[in-house]
Length: 253
Image 1 (cartoon, one colour):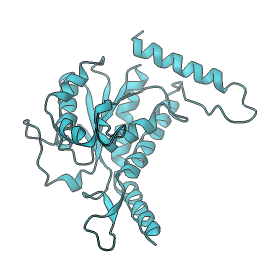
Image 2: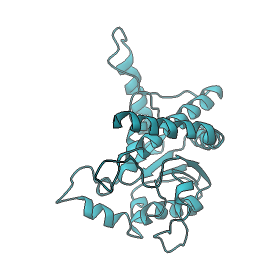
Image 3: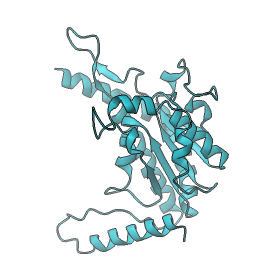
């Protein structure tokens, strides 16, 4: 049963993250916690399926204020498959050098912010643009992706470096280079990718560690609560407070 084969592959990736990446996850969490404690941001960015860990972490139940998602709609390719904002346009756009710098112009940044980037291969130009611009602005750049598997890949950016080579810190998501992990009878291509699961696993290992660090420091977290728990009469108020804090921070006051 191929369902079990995919599940075994996913478990192996999660175990490898646990066995090899805990130290770097701790280091990444400390950098992020420093930014959030100072009232600054951890900006998050990715393209294609690498937008999914960004959408997963904030805003949602159990997420907390301090993470600023930057999701550029033409770079998601999940809205349309063909026609406007289709897959062909996405594949072209994520390789266009200079586009990432234009994206950065639409947001405010501080040198004490952190830039958290997601990329499976680390070779496409838009992510590298974002990393270069962030470093020029004085931010620490943290990259999550399949770093070991990308070692022999060639960058598509004129700077000559991959995203992993530009990062101040890398957490390897331990997904295989081809991503899809389950072979299928009579087919060349496999099914069952594992990189999104790897991203989300590493994200929540990191975000929960950030929360732990900040709580230990006595910092109040503005957490998004579940508003569907029977008997909880204050969840809407707590959500309103979290959104108010987000608005205050984004306004820079």
